[in-house]
Amino acid sequence: MKFFKFIASTLALCAVFSVQARSLDEIKKGGKIMVATEGQFAPFNYFKGTTLTGFEVEVAELAAKKMGLKIEWKTIGFDALLTGLKQDRWDLVIASHGVTEERAKAVTFTAPHYCSGGMVIAMDPAIRSAKDLGGKIVAVQTGTSYLENVQKVTTIKEMKNFPTDVDARSALTSRRVDAWVTDRFVAKEVVAKNPKAGLQLGEMVFIERIASAVAKGNQPLADAWSKALAETMADGSYAALSKKYFNEDVRCN
Ligand code: ARG
Image (cartoon, rainbow, N blue to C red; front, side, top):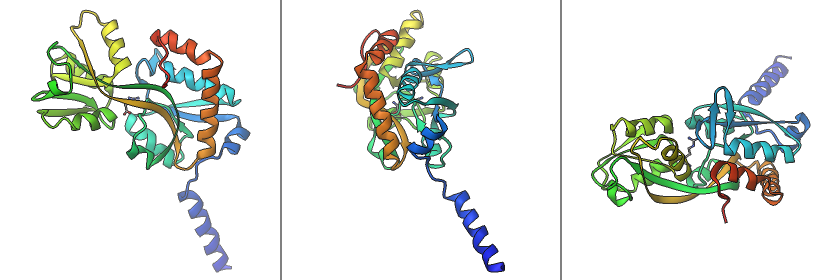
């Protein structure tokens, strides 16, 4: 008896610790997919008052609908998003992650929902390119591909990390740094919305494909998501959203 109790409790413990990603079938059965994002990266994922919205939030809603699913949204710091997949805290992450080799070791990416890249923004119009970052202090959000790519510019004086991209931007507008590297569309919107701030759009430092991620190896879920996304691209609904947010089509080609 004791032995069986031991086996039973060992099995229970294993169930607690070996969390497994929910399968596509399980998700479909429940009718609800748990999607995590950051909510501080306008115009892609952000809060309008208390409502989560943005281009990729709306794209996700379209894709989920094609799959016959409702989304239960979670918002959390950018740094915790991909690790949460491993812990099975949510089924999918959509937060403007660039598809990188490093990340692909830890998660499975879906097809990309837009293409973009890191851009230099500064107050000084002379700071425009990666080369111009030499000798300068540069702000980037922690854990991003901007950080990775700015690091490659060996001549920079210092790189400052910020928990959110909004903080990195504030560091620039308050002149605590010389430049900020962020997404090209984020940069464009900030400059357009703050015409008097004196922000200057520079050049792109690198380009990247932006995709959703699911737990490593949950290929059926990734494939179903990619298929649903392709349907939104085929039926004109993706194009309409892209036009609304950017006045251009931001899909990868
Ligand atoms: N595209 C960049 C990356 O791949 C930045 C993503 C930032 N996303 C966010 N929700 N703050 O790392």
